[in-house]
Length: 250
Ligand code: PXP
Image 1 (cartoon, helix red, strand yellow):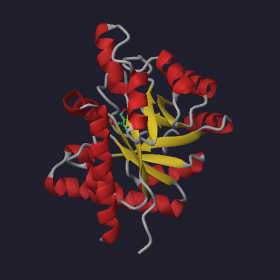
Image 2 (cartoon, rainbow, N blue to C red; image 1 turned 180 degrees about the vertical axis):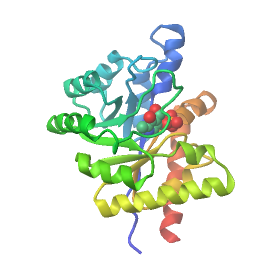
Image 3 (cartoon, rainbow, N blue to C red; image 1 turned 120 degrees about the vertical axis):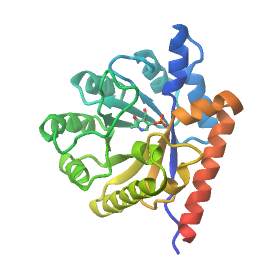
């Protein structure tokens, strides 16, 4: 059986900035977290510059762009302001996410199908700047078709619902993720996944053959309080690799 393609781990450092901002100072430094993540084997760093700057701020993106030795995936709302910032910094990738000011975290996926006319020029501007565009969407065939129509090469499937559910409902959501990932393969979209992943639930998602990257943040930063960031990332990496190997054997 041919080996499954490698699965990358993008470490989201937003919540290092959340803790820093709780006191309004400089510590803990998200750039230090990014350096530790890179040394622990993260394949990329993800940071979400929210419109309200509640965690990552513009200076963090400047610092990451300057100092990071691994790819930066900038998550952002699909607004002209954010597109301008991305084009100014030229991260490796930009992931367009829906954003509501009052939400605690990104709820639901981007409505790529319903917002085609709004998104089309923004995706084109990012692509013209040489930035790899990804759309954070629900595992819905309509949204995958919309990503193709927009010319986005990558989609990130929202795993939030899978992570919150249990039992049969969780299995049903996993089946939906698997189907969407397989469809990505047919449509020529690179498939990423993320949101809410932890040691307890990462395995089945990591084993989906078409998934090429997982973006994980909140759990890793929380676990780092107890074991340190390096150990938390190494354990996540181990669980991803183990699930991938088992998926290949299945
Ligand atoms: N992927 C995207 C597009 C996100 O918006 C987030 C949360 O910022 C994540 C992944 C990471 O989610 P979590 O912090 O729950 O691991």
